[in-house]
Image 1 (cartoon, rainbow, N blue to C red):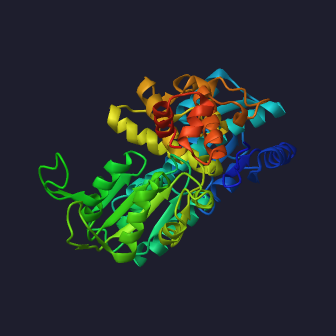
Image 2 (tube, rainbow, N blue to C red):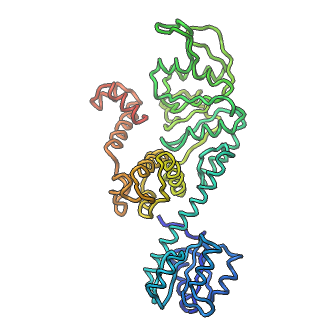
Image 3 (cartoon, one colour):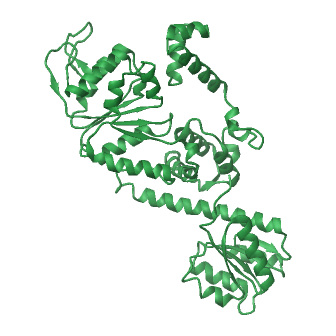
Length: 454
């Protein structure tokens, strides 16, 4: 994926007019840079208070000031500017001196076009990463002030999501969050809660796919003492525990039909009955539901109640896949490096261009959660200050992205998941029929459906 360097402001300082014009043209045409050209040092230095340069290509031999003097002055005045020295009078001593003072690289005249583009491109990658780290630091600095704690949204799709969150949070309406596994549905739910008038109340989360039908009923509604065999004391259900707060129902598409009926009644009547009790308990809760499945399709197949769907889907928040917000990947990487530096007591400063290039080409079927796991692993394995390709999983480093689409390269687990999903859809999610077609026990099918969130 071609990087956008248009935000990086570049200057070239050289006393040869023809050279200036050639370099300016090459950088603008090949890298999309905005380039300012100066044929003496004084003219450049007089402009640095008005223009915030990120990159400078500097000739060591200028008519008014030598390049080393300019470099020394510039690094004291604006230490974050990246400088590439260019000269026709190269010596080992001048190269070493320039690098020690702070130059990023060193090129000899006559310039080779490909080498120039390669060297400048590498420096631009470094500048972009530095800008993203600064943006990350600003985000982290605002964490204590911003209820959207840890919510990284740089691309337009995610900015739109945050705008929706801010609009609907105070309204106390039910919300349905849709998105693939690992896109951050619970984080969005917590953000809505944190920005709402219920923020001081509890945030109760339950995974509807993590329990059997009997267990989820008991978890949601609770029970009275001796309501059934083994009920030795009263138990408060999660719906009741969410009083004055928010109830988050994750993977709502996995909720059994009989429990769907009970939840619909709770929403309509705003009251519940504990198992074994005839005494109603009035409710003051907000419900936020989330799913990685297409509820509209489930409704059409009569696997999910249409009336419940409309009750939950008052406002819909759809989260983009990570591959649809690839511009957020570098800042998410920086965020996770910072997070796991603290956890593992490491001092990793960044990630190499090759490693980040591999990650930007990867398809991320597990979305942000998968990226976090990858960076957590890389930080744990890295002994230096930079994450490199060898610290990434082999299924990322071994992929040939040049000739093969990543969508064609799936693990055995992904193939198995997709096949089971196709058979389930063919049978209308009839587990008995699905198990028969797959020639596996129903208990095995149940475990695999739970494993793959099907």
